[in-house]
Image 1 (cartoon, rainbow, N blue to C red):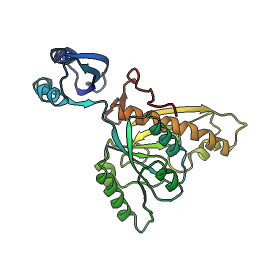
Image 2 (image 1 turned 90 degrees about the horizontal axis):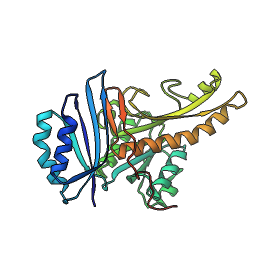
Image 3 (image 1 turned 60 degrees about the horizontal axis):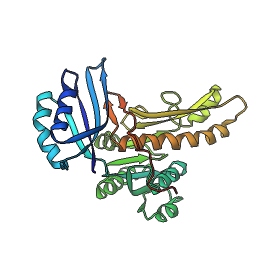
Length: 294
C-alpha cells in the first residue's frame, strides 16, 4: 500500500487539523503518524501527516482535490509519495569520512535518497565513487576559474535534476547566486558546534579555548557563511588530556552522524524553514530501517 505524506505551513488559526483530517478521511486515507507545531512567536503553524490510501487514491487525485481546502485556509502545502527518493549530488574535497559514510548508508538503503553524482575539486575519491557506479565529476576550483567552475557544477546539478546538494566537507565557498538559486536545497556539515567557532580551523579554535564539548552542525547553506538555518547538531565530550589532533579525530565521527541525520530529515520532508530557524519533526516509525544489512 502506497504511503504518502502531506506537508503544511500557514498562519495559525482554528480548524486546520480538523479540515485536513476530514479531507483525508473523505478520500479513504488512514493517518499513520502526524506531527504539528504552533510557533507562538511568529504565529506560524507547521504540520506533517503520513498516511496511506485504503481506496487507492492517486497522488494526482489527492493534489487536485485538495485545492479548495488549501485555498480556504491559505495553506502552503505539498503532497509526496514516500517511495520516491530525492536525487542528491554529493560534493567533497579532501576529507572523505562523510562521503564514505553516506555511500555506505546509501548502499544499504538507510537513506531515502538516490545519489546521482559526486563532484569534487580533487581526485582522491574518484575510484571509490566509480566503484559504487556513481558518476564522478572532477571540477578543479582556483581563484581564477571559480565562476566557470561553479557554472559547471550547476550544469551537473541541473542535468541530473537534483533535488538536494550535500556539501560533505566540500571546502569551497559557494557564490551568493548559487546559494539563492538552491535556497533550502543545499545542506552543509560544519565541523564545529555553531554558532561558536565559525570559519577556518574551528577545532583549533576550540582546543585553544579549552572547551569540554566539541560538536558538529548541519545547516542549510545561505549567502551568509555558516549562518544558515540549523537542521541537526550533536556533541562529544573532551578533556584537558586530548590534543588538537584528538579533537579532529573525535569530530569526524560526529560530523558523519550529524550530516546523515540532517539528510534523513530533509529527504523525509520533516524539515520546515521557519525564518532563520527550522522546525524538524520526529522520524516516522520504521523510517530508519535499512533495505539491506550491509
